[in-house]
Image (cartoon, rainbow, N blue to C red; front, top):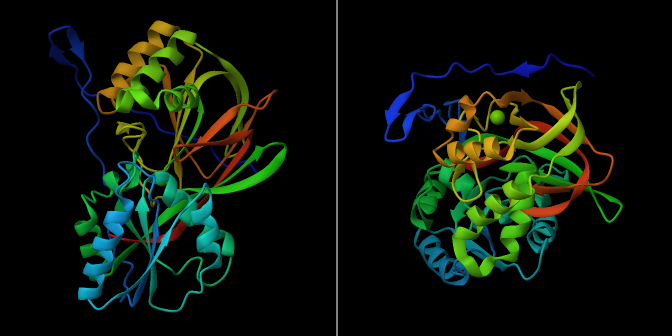
Length: 345
Ligand SMILES: [Mg+2]
């Protein structure tokens, strides 16, 4: 089915003067949730904490005991589940025996949330859309928590005990791994192109700490790989050579990069930034604008769209990244599921 291609035409603001010439300021911040209406108040009786003890600063175990004792003081029961291997959170959540009044709590990063919602939505039962998620930032990438302005575990706890819920869009991502079709649900972003190259390189340089992301990006820019692909945006074909596609549910990704400064998590669509084949110098300039809180959106080499369905086809399988994890390859399809997840906000 072909829907009208929704291109977002942006009018740049006046340039500001700086030491090295004039430049565009970053876009004005937009709300994470566009729909400010409160969905419901949810009284929580019991929380399943899904704790990734390896994430981020490896404080998961410590946080879990603090959370359990604070929940106990609020007369809320808690059950702690530690994840032990990749996809364990998905497996745990798919088998939990929920009752009304239950909630999930993610203690980890964006990847942990991604596994939890995948387990929840793959159940395909009445709990898939009714069990709300509390988000405790404890990973190396906490884009969702940052965009929701959840500062720490105490903030997350307060939101849970207050019980105010909002609904968030989720993307159903179909891709391939070892020749087999896989499904994963995304709350944050899907990467294809230079961003994935940079992430794969960065993962090999973990010893460098957070600067590995910048170095990975610079190395990928210097390599300057360009990929041909057929990209269908709501059925509309863009057949071209690309440096990068930024596919975003939330505004930020990676190491606090504002990749899609105009994205809302509840507008029923995901945002797409398209960067065609441009020179290494232009990519470098773009990367600097990206680091400057998202002023890359004013760059004439970036096209900006919103979509409900996105398909990427390539001649050879190319790597994709979902919510910070390098999971598989193209062909890729994303379907936006509006309001598919309830979160404490
Ligand atoms: Mg959106």
